[in-house]
Amino acid sequence: MPVILISRGTMSGATLLVDCLRERTGYRCITREDLVGLVNQHGEIANRTVETIGRAARAYEQFSQLRRPYVILMRLALLEFALHDNLVYSGYSGHLLVPYVRHFIRVRISAPLPLRVRMTMDRLKCGEEEAKEYILQEDQRRGQWARFMYGKEIRDPHLYDLWVNLERMSLQAVCSLIQEMARESEFQATPESQAEVEKLHLETLVEAALAMDPRTQALEVGAQAEGGRIELLGPYLEDDQLKVVESIVLGVDGVQGMIYTPGYAPTLSMTP
View 1 (spheres, helix red, strand yellow):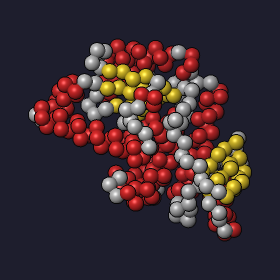
View 2 (cartoon, rainbow, N blue to C red; view 1 turned 45 degrees about the vertical axis):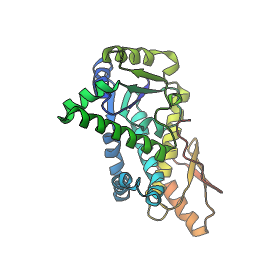
View 3 (tube, rainbow, N blue to C red; view 1 turned 90 degrees about the horizontal axis):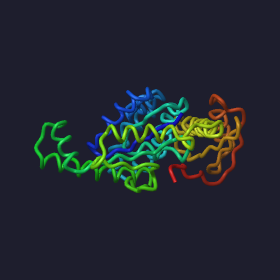
View 4 (cartoon, one colour; view 1 turned 60 degrees about the vertical axis):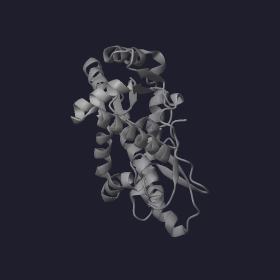
């Protein structure tokens, strides 16, 4: 069954949509807070990375240092949920954490400004002008976040399989549309697409282990899995550094062997 990744604007009605999907499908529904909960289980370095990244976005040097471990850890958390299918993730840019996978459905939901203003006024108990200002500021902040973190424009329609606008569609109609889409054959998990998720998960497990170990957290090392064997691509290492890397990688569950190729670490592959 599919994994549905919903990207939403500020006060766009996505929470109500997720409630509808949960009631109709029984899918497990998660948000960024659930991902952060898993990330924090990886210890102090992971916890500090997540806590600091929001502030670091305003300080480029610190942001650059935290971007890679943050993306790795959040991707790992999302993949750990996605391994079991039947999942709805609702957030702003979580769909950008993972590359294209056959049974991942990427949905963008938007709503006209007057509707968003009314929802904001109701939620925040504020006036109309204050609600408009809040929406505009949040939209700008989240757009900047996607550009800084993933190098993507969150409103690029090519990043989605489906973009719906609540101006002329009810939430119930949108819910039905996504349900029908999730039943289509091209979005069903296959042995190949499930193996792709498992491969991504193992690669990210290895990268997270290296990013969270104080001895290797400064190294930019990319992992590629073939079965249980891991090929690492990264900077030239001294023999003692390589031994440390090898001991960490071989300690990851599911890893059966490792080779190291010196060079440049591959760019974190995200949504094309």
